Amino acid sequence: MSPWITYGLPGVLLLTTAIVLFGQTRPARLPAMFLTLIGILLLLVAVFPGLERAVLPNKIRLFMGVVSLTHLFITLEAVRRNTLKERYALLWIGTGLALLVFAIQPNVIGWLVQVTGMHYTSAIMLVIFSFLILIAFHVSLVLSQYETDRRKLAQKIALLEEQIRRLEDKLQP
Image (cartoon, rainbow, N blue to C red; front, side):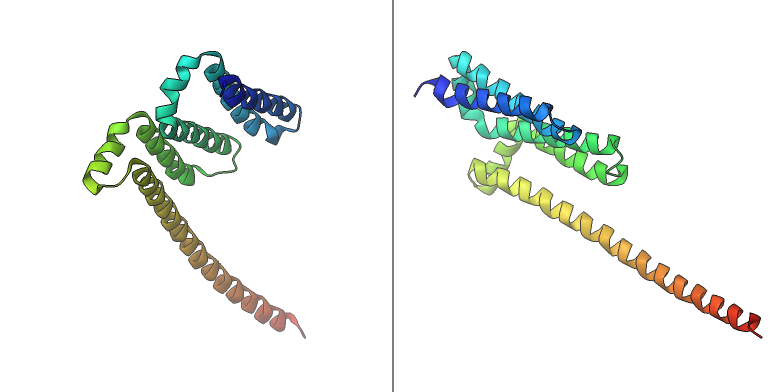
């Protein structure tokens, strides 16, 4: 099949969608930038057929690299807009950087494949699953702390309400 049909047409469609999204409201800019990046990459593969041979064997690494860079960009943008606290952003930035290291340096995954005897794709899924487990654990810790804080605040409010009721009773003739 022609690279123009396989890569060029989807690239043009993604760029067209990105142009439409750029005309929308501000929240649509991030997906528009992501679609633009992928559309340009697909067009480059269509224009230069030699890139297809270089990119295709490394599709998983390329995908991991794009996902990790997008992940890092979204995290930094959320911190910049004050929608994500720095405390939590460190975990997400660490995850994005680890994924980027795995995408750039395949020897790390290769070592994991040799040690565990898994296939390459299974090893990548193991790494991603491990990070998801760590993130879920971190969220559980934060939720536990919030639950403790909420319980303490409820107790303090109950005590203050009781004090107010007693003071109101003293002031009533």
